[in-house]
Amino acid sequence: MWKSSAGVKEWSMAKETEIKLEIKDLKVLERKLKKLGAKTVGTGNGRVHEFNTIFDTPEGGLAKHGQLLRIRTETSIGKGKAGGAKRIVLTFKQPAIFKSGLASTNPESRRRTDEEGGRFKVREETETELTDSGPLTKIFEGLGMRGWFSYEKYRTTWKLGAKERWAKDLLIEVDETPVRTYVELEGPPEAIARDASTLGFSRRDYLVKNYLTLYAEDCRRRGVAPGNMLFETKKK
Image (cartoon, rainbow, N blue to C red; front, side):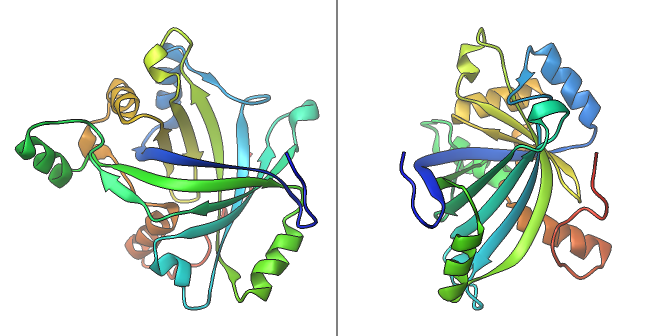
């Protein structure tokens, strides 16, 4: 671990594979997860408020190349010492790759999978935890970038029990957003597909869009101008 004057604590690089699924009834999903033996991850009830700001040049140089630069502030929700704990994370994401993820020797099967949906989003990301976002924000602004889109959500992360060895690297992340509720499944493609099926979803239900795109689509449906994806009043 190392620390710099810009407030950087440590960093990591990984390749994430994920999908999103739209949730119609959160309580029904939670009952299914508990029935499968899943438990929340983290302190208290595991629920965390996330405030995200995406940085880019005025011309959208990063977005045009499929890249993303984001500062996220996570605040634990709950009573006692766990409540109010903060974590600040800087993330840089490379362009996403979309693929079926599951091995198949049948070209027709692979073609049908891609046409019908069921693809996975694969993306290399580098993350570092910050002690303070202020200095880095000033650096970005000095380089000609600005925070041009902010969005917030409440995330609760679940994991299946140890007996489910196939799911040991699978994260089940429930995101309550200002527009809809989604669950992100992140991990090996085979585990994602198995868990999605167990929860009652088919490959046609897979979403690989980011929250900016989902928000923009929702604004178009409602006939309103897009801004930032924020709650009108804080959820409890």
